[in-house]
Image (cartoon, rainbow, N blue to C red; front, side, top):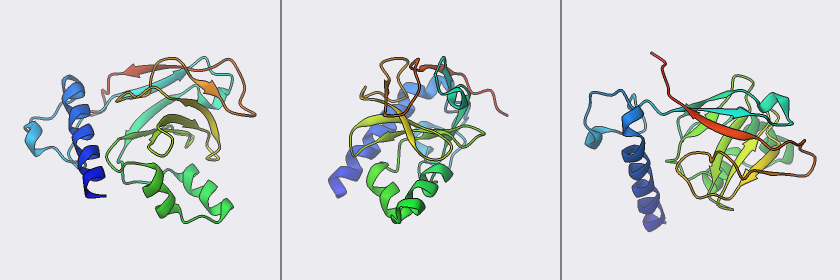
Length: 158
């Protein structure tokens, strides 16, 4: 477990290093942690057959649980925190839209997921990337085609 957390911490630091040009923090990288004001990019989903997903997603604290994820867990009578701890690595940012759709890296099956506002999974992608990949998404049962394209956008929030 400690080794697993150490590996995920290293992955987080690699992500920070790769994305550092998009950050607007005057602090040194050595002082960055999950509560610092790093400027992680936005993620835009475009062209999806699921029109609710064709929106901009903002980066979120890795320890905060998506509302839709909580709804799914409650409906299935699962322990929300326990399930989030099992599926999220606790260091990778996830992304949420205003409509509560969200995108996250699932360490359990090693895939990126695009989930709708209800928490239902719609698309997955098995690319092992720091951010959601632009293409290669697969529709889950019941999800509408065409498949989404993902565009990484600079975060200009103040």
